[in-house]
Amino acid sequence: MTRTKLDLSEFDETPPNKDPARLREISDVAGFPSRPAVPAVAKTAPVPAPADHPQAATFQRPPRATGNRNIAINVRVDPETAARLYALRDADPSRKRVLADVIEDATLLLYERELGAAGR
Image (cartoon, rainbow, N blue to C red; front, side):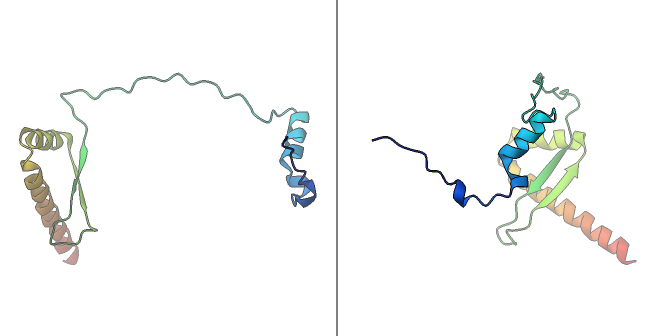
């Protein structure tokens, strides 16, 4: 038993000006290749950040168990502070949660100060 390809051209609703084969033929005749060659791009290794100048980091505090679980606070810190916080966190994994709470409290304090300054 052999398989034959069904001719479904009678059911094709594609208008002549939108037919992909016809458009490809027109572009090839006009001198525009339908599939232009993509030049290969040489991949380079990423430039590592120097150890004495770590990049700035964004710390995200997970929501507390008693609070709204859909809210997380992002804190942007400078590179030196980020390096110190990462060093503290890596020195003792149990401090990770404490650091998250400290960052949250500092963020809320700054936020309240901004609200107070804006209300004056």
